Image 1 (cartoon, rainbow, N blue to C red):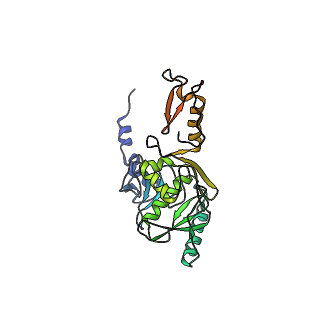
Image 2 (image 1 turned 90 degrees about the vertical axis):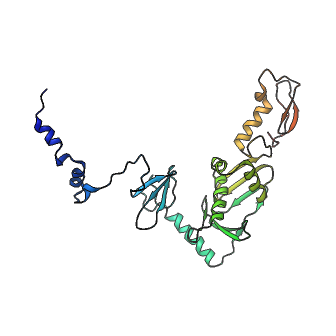
Image 3 (image 1 turned 60 degrees about the horizontal axis):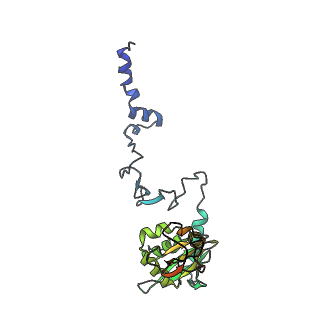
Length: 273
């Protein structure tokens, strides 16, 4: 097949130059000089760029976080539903209302533990005494905790919100990435949580966990995880290997138990597993 040389001249002409095409498409004299960043890599020279899992926007104001990699709302309207222009107006309205209560001296609530449960009532603000001996304020919204975004940044309040908010939403993975098992136990004990089952809730959202003091296992189990372990011990599924035989003594949670005829153990529900 013979191709006319004029075809290559046409393809290399300004008409097919990317900058020229952009200029024609957008009708801008400067469009040909537009910077088109590679979206697969972080680019700090573009208006938006990704770094450490967070999308940032560079504009007239200081850089601000927009979305986490998982699409979680941080400081702007969520991309997942661009048609909902006022999707986060209730969130901001509740923040502003609670901030007004703080300004006008409304009595704050105090965090307390009752029946091994920590519960933050929705649309409320709480004060807690930090390690610095000062009072810190946190907001309890519909189903989430928040710092006072209308006040100056409070690092200790932010850590408090992150810890208890993660528990209320069942995000224990985030906790284990930031704290050691010993630190998690220490924070819960300082709050008044005792060993065994405990619950953390924000509004209608709550999660139940088991706090273990067995240093050989994780500090926290969800109730579902505990039930699975417990059932395996009682039914004998945990001791099906040939090295385990009925009448044999095994140690579970620091206590000795004797395997029954089904290779299960008689262990009280709520005991260390």
